[in-house]
Image (tube, rainbow, N blue to C red; front, side):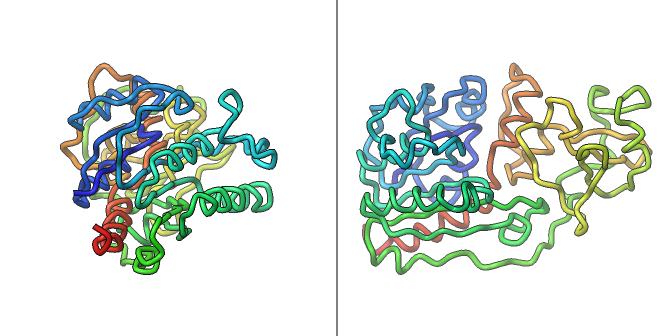
Length: 314
């Protein structure tokens, strides 16, 4: 069974997708000890809780995965990434580990905005760095509602690298699939939830949301309330739960206004209903974890394609 090491693991969405595809998850690194509790409640091993720049004990693995933060790449042109332990950003630390472990393949995930960051220079630096390590790259942008049958408008870029050119050539990018699932399969408009999730006239933005329609999911943007035209959930963000209207809201079937619960957000990321969320983690941290995570069924499909491409190299 192919062995996977995960970085920036968060609540374990990427690792879960690879596990569902038949991979063996042997290692995970995450800097946030609270979010790591979610991971550890669902996987058999402990998380290596430390800054990635301090990671130096990664076990041998076949695949490296990670949704690295999109931090400043201002040092990239100076080529300090591999050696600068103080200022090197997260991508270069991940590249350092890829160089060290030389896996058969890797999968990196980031926001779609990476494509145009710094007029495309950032992505070119990433590509050049990984190609200099001897990898052949597939770079794809997938939206969950188009490629994973998940009703969320979530576009992400995926960088898949193979050490062997034949595996690279065998890899098949995902094809679009029909969206047959509705938000009602993930959000119960009849459910009674804790009162803290409901909004009333004392809520500062209540006038914006009081007249929203049922059976839709809305977010507040500046002084406007919005929902996706195709009745899917707007992109879930890590800023949920911090105020400012970033947590999506609905009108329930009994005409009350409430925000989505953290569990509903995780379900809209494709997490299974039996995934465990420890009770000693605050709802703010759960929202952050959900917004920072990935669409699990999408990851599973990518993982299956990687597995198929590698099967002749085993």
